[in-house]
Image (cartoon, rainbow, N blue to C red; front, side, top):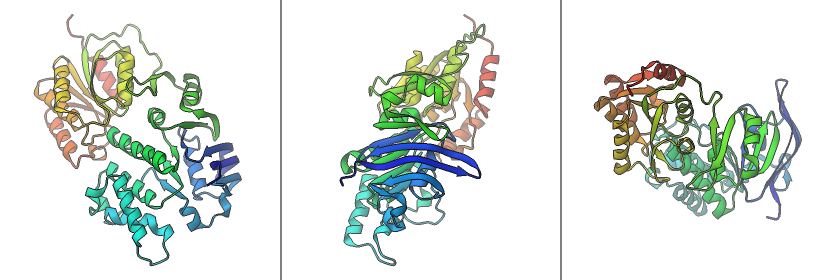
Length: 426
């Protein structure tokens, strides 16, 4: 293909019920690029994807896909060029994993046609790429959130698209599944030269896996370029309204963003209490910042070395038990975590999503109760919505409740409780 750009957008305007969502947006995505759009909620990121897939049509401006006007494509023709992985996927019928992936071949098949030999090969390639061989016969309704997202990605790959659109594909997934999904996408981009446009809400995930980024705000592009050019402290503060520290991840060399809360070091409220924090996936960053500012002695574990909470702990100089990237928590690291728990006055379990890779962190919280440690839990939603372990995490949560752990609905209630505790003697 000789087209220089997979996507060209010029002077794009879109309004919904009189509310202007996109305001003269301009964006070029080169062919073969691994490109992302980031920005605050309501900035118009997902609206751009809906226009590219023609879910929204009443826009003004020019949109080109692979060198042609978007309006010039017939429906099935566009479906052979573009595939999308949505933020959420709901399918109430018990189709098997393989059947769901097979739906991706529909744009290439005539009505009522059965899959050809080439179709079957494409489906097998999609299953192999997304590591779904062991799940191919299982009903889609029986899968965890991360497994379902891999199935939808496989369905998109079965379309054999030239352009892959991702609408916050890692939302609600634990950190292990987030990294797995993004690794698959990065490999596809490199090996199959598929152009990728991903809308992401996690700045650190974007910086780890994307080549170029567009920063959106109030319906237009504020900055566009390489990760280093866009993810600066000034740009992030201006668009997101938060103060951050921009540094380099010591394991990957990639840019890493650490939010810094207002009133970072409150006066006259220093606490002589040691807290061991069990967190992950960004659930511990605000807690670490607040407790550090109030003078709590902190330790953290176990965290994957690519986790955003890991970088926060490193930035603040907090002792940490870390695990290798992409690895589940080992018995050795679990034992180190228990050693830190033994030295703590309080064990705090943040509002974490649990998958097979970090389940031992939840087990360590239960072990803390058994060791007589005061154990505090933040749980803002029903545990079943955060459990991607086929019920194992839910069972441990129930044991924690019965064992007398103190549970709070949100971070602020938990912080108020911690600040009310008398300091231990010096």
